[in-house]
Image (cartoon, rainbow, N blue to C red; front, side, top):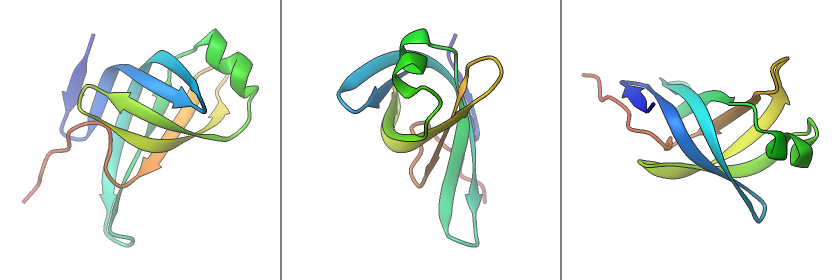
Length: 100
């Protein structure tokens, strides 16, 4: 299932951590922060055993790619279900609605 609304995306993505590529499911949202003039996006990567084995709960830089584009990101703190938090700033890897 793939869907995207004005400021979000749910679906399949590719996550590159170092030289390792993972096919993952993500739920992403975002917002424009007028104080710093950047778009902040965030979400969760569905549980992935191979990813969890590599990260072991640590914070790490990565690149997240969807069918709409790719963006550098940071993976942090897995939740109780083993889903890692993903966050980035500036151009998100999904389309964003323009509001007037």
